[in-house]
Amino acid sequence: MAKSTTTYEVLLNLDVTADRADRADFEHVEFVNCIFGDLSKLNFTNCYFKNCNLSNAKTIGSRLQNCLFKDSKLLGTNFSGARDLSFEVHFENCNLDYSSFDKKKMNKSSFKNCKIHHSNFTQCDLSKSTLSNCDLFETLFSGTNLSGLDFTENRNFMIDPETNALKGTKFLTSQLAGLLYRYPIIITH
Image (cartoon, rainbow, N blue to C red; front, side):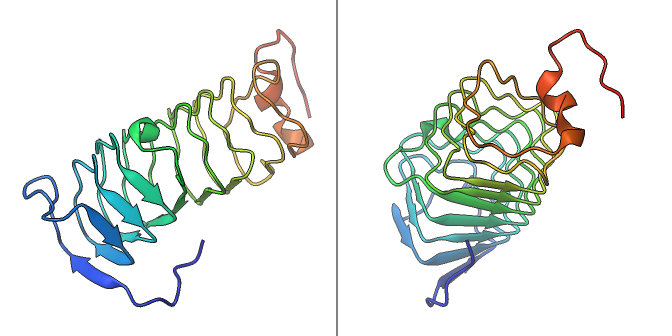
């Protein structure tokens, strides 16, 4: 997702952890260098987060519709509590270590150039999403729909073909170890 040419309201250096937002709805808002500790029950539509820190942010009952996070830190953020209706998020150059998308339908979401270590995509539907040039070290995929995804530019993933949907998913032959890790076999080049 590219940031649209629509005029955005710009909010700089906001700390939603310390001083709770005075409104619940944000549409076409650009947040720059902001800190968010709690997004619960807030609605974000077509918003852009640049250089923001959303680490460990709560998302219970929040709406995240077509939101772009760029160059931001989202360590330990649990997106599972966000509302499912119209949930669509895009990440570019973000750190999503220890984040959770458990049971989320990702609705054309995207992850580009992201570090996603020790994260959770259990029972998530990523079939209409994209992952490009992401480091997925020890990220959990279990009961996850990965059908149609292209993993050829991603690295450090371990995906069990027996517990995940992989119809039409693309991998490089050099990535087979990430698919066969649970079997007592030796793969050589």
